[in-house]
Length: 239
Image 1 (cartoon, rainbow, N blue to C red):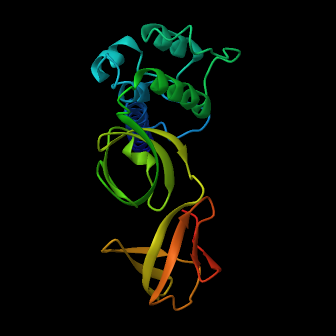
Image 2: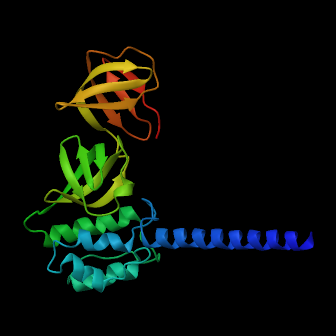
Image 3: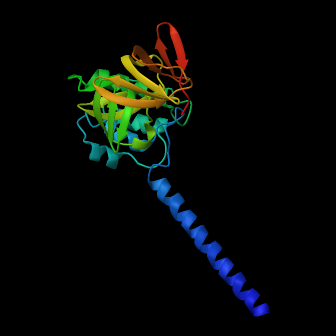
């Protein structure tokens, strides 16, 4: 009987060891992949090459010049400005080590004002209607996603930067007052609303059993999303 128990104990130890290895592999893969979700408190270094590819250095060259692991620091930004010969023109508040998203994109706007003389990079608020692999369908067009496709959620709004037809950076999420204007509500069956926008049908859950059919409405995407029609506000569930 002792030998049987010993074998069982060994099998249990082997199983636990294999499970631990599997967990570590997943965590390591996640670290190298897209474990870093969208954050307002920081910018990831691997976001920078796409944003600065409009300059005289290519995306690949920026990836070589700047470490691609971890979050952006003020020292990194200082080095970027030095490479762009803008250090004496754009002052830095380097009292903190890491730079948050709002502060970096304020600096990025200044970089654009100095160097993007052809206005090749555009700033835009988008509302995501659909995401397919690395492509977004928005309220006013379809765009390719350069990086971090997991950041985008259906019917959430984003302040983004575009280069041609590509999203190259995200400055903010859940921008207020971004809306699908004049969407046509077709039906609401068991809290699942079907609506028509620019010739395509979409569906989304709603927090109401109202009929909501054959009516024109604006669908807003904010932290508490809602439909506005004939002066009424109908809430949408938070995702």
